Length: 387
Image: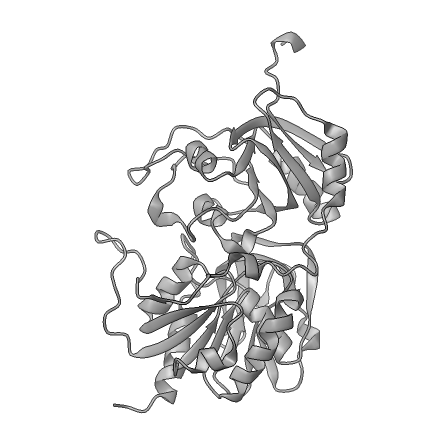
């Protein structure tokens, strides 16, 4: 086809190394600067875009059929998208799902998130795997006017996620109660009315489906902001404490969260951490965390559970990891990634304190790790005197 008949690009993605990808923009217009990661999940793009753990990141999807089931209010993990933008291979088609209430294009536009289609996402993913998660500038202009040199310079000027506390940007503003359980046909989300366990969840960027899993496991959940003190947590007289997922550098958030977790450890309560909560629990116990090259993002990650000997397929989303070699005496490594051997779980020996790197609620799937919520509930039942 002659160049004169080629459609003019309406979006571009500029990497800090000067590489530029052109494509078709949809969603909101404008520019955004962030870290770029890739996600291998075949389902759950709406949950991914609203996962607070993606703050400061543009997500490129390796699966090409993004947008083909539309969007709906039930699948949001938080009130609005948190990921900075998305990059996909094919432009979204008309939704084909009885649950859809809005197209992905309109959903993104209403929520101020930029997206770009028509990209060779295989090539882009290879670039991420080679050089690590790059800093990028993503721009959508319906007129196709781009200052490439300026976009590259903006990407180079991005400070990155190391040393960045993002939990304070995505945490709740004030405490609230949560009693909604996991989705079930045909009623949707039932309400937990007879929860035997009182749990305080510290919100570093909690996903709604994680809170639903706690409720489904018999927990009466009170959610507190990331900056809550140990005194504020213990004032609720909880049977257990949950440390949520979240974005950013665990060492940065840990500056205020780790001292709180150390105090909670002295209270001898069952403690369960996920993702960022897992990393900060490791820091509180004397371990250390490291920035990964391109992280783990997807719904098909095999993890070995040393406590059961089983391999489970898990949902992952993290760019930092616990250094398994740094764990002190008395802290055991319970889970490990079968992709790269990185740490995926720890437990305090002879104490009901444990955490995992993956997301065991795994909405929309897989559900191999739901037993961890039941394990947490079992620890609380064992610590709580019978009434």
